[in-house]
Each structure stands twice: as structure tokens, then as C-alpha cells.
Length: 286
Image 1 (cartoon, rainbow, N blue to C red):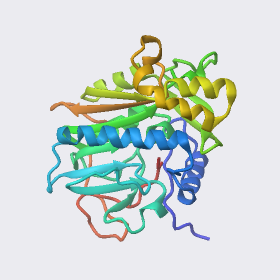
Image 2 (image 1 turned 90 degrees about the vertical axis):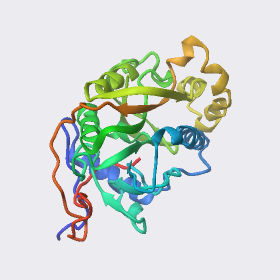
Image 3 (image 1 turned 135 degrees about the vertical axis):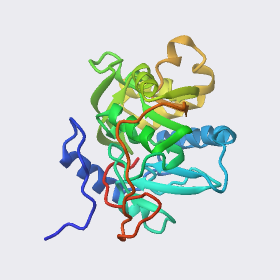
Image 4 (image 1 turned 180 degrees about the vertical axis):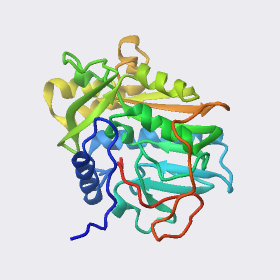
């Protein structure tokens, strides 16, 4: 029988079956359950960063904002036209402009958006960070803004493992107290990739400093998450500052920065042309 769902494309090193499994999983679960203390802290931390950085995004009613890997979360992005892009196509139902799309192969034209917000560890499901950042650079106009959040390989969860501090490492971790397979990245590596694609990091924040260490040795997720209450103080200590589980960066794309590919106008899910968007993509939702 034909499959009417979007088919995930596969960047180098990412099996199509993995991307399909990610799509199927995130189509049916609640992405930010309030009962999960760990995720509740991350969601509040992301929301606080976006709210604090909103004036620097220079949003206007005419702005185009890409919410990459949006799931069903808006993150308070307004004003402007918000394009919600995610592999979890069922999460996009009812949204004003929801497009099934792949972070490694975004279904948008070159210079299509003014701002891109990619949070919820979306990029941790893409093995090829250079390709994903290159795609964001391609669709983001010169002098556009990017908010990028990811999980770090320098997290205390990976201390005393071969993954700690690696530029990129495939790991088994947890999500809503279930096993999860993702990539984690060294912040220095992510910054190099961003710089190579014309981005300058202008602000940064981190979350979960003590929690990963507690989880590493106790494997009690909700107990470990309680230690996030100390983030504001522990994050000032040099040892812990570079060992957070989550990092969020505010970036500016400098004029002249180049993405990986050219862009063409594409078609919407209903076959009609929708401002350079294409509903036939695939990929990951965070």
C-alpha cells in the first residue's frame, strides 16, 4: 500500500529507518510533558531565553520566522509569519503554516526567512551538523538571526565515557524516562560550524549543570532534575560552566555568509505554491 506520510531523507550517517522511527515516535507522544521535571526545566529555560532575546530578533508583522522542529510548541514567537517545520507531521495539524520538513534538507527557498528558532534538541537527531547548519544558513537571509539549542557531549552524563568532549558522538540517553538514541556535540565544534557558515554567536546560556552528574551515577531522572534549581549559581563555577547538558546560542548571520546549497521556490503540501515552501520534506521534530 502507498504511504502518504512524508519520507525522511537521510544525511550521511543517518539511516532512513532511524528518521522514520523518530517521526513515528514524536507523532504520538506529548513532547513537553509537565510531569517530567527535567524537560519542564529545559522548556522554561528555553522560553526565558527566547523572551529575553526577542528584542534582538527585531520581529515585525512582516517578518518570517522558521520554527524548525517545532512539534506543537510556538515558543511565543510573534509578531510575524511563523512557519512550523517538523517531521512529526501530525503535530502540525491545525497550525496556520505547518510544513513537514527535514533540518538537513529544508523545504524552503534561499533567504526565505528572517529568523530561525531551532530548539528542543532538534539538531541532536541530525548526525551531520554541518549540513543542518548549512541548510539554516541557506534559508536565512543575510543579517538574519538564529537561536540554536543542543545537548552537549561535555555533559556530566558522559563523564568517564568515550563520548565525553567528542565533537560528535552517538549516544544512548533518555527522553521522558525512556531510552533514546541521539547525537551529542561539543560546543566548540558547533561554534566552528556556525562560524564557517557566516554566523557569529552574540549571546549564550546553559542549563542542567549538576543534574547530569546526579543522573550519571544514580539513574533517577526526577531526583536528578531537582538539582536544576541550582543552575544559576553552579553555572558560575568554572568547572561546571563548560559541563552543562544543554546549550542555547543566539547567533547573527553576517552578510556574505554562505549556506551549502542554492534554493528554489517549492510547493506546499496541497500542491499550491506557498511563498517558497515545500510540504514534501521529512525530518526530525524536537
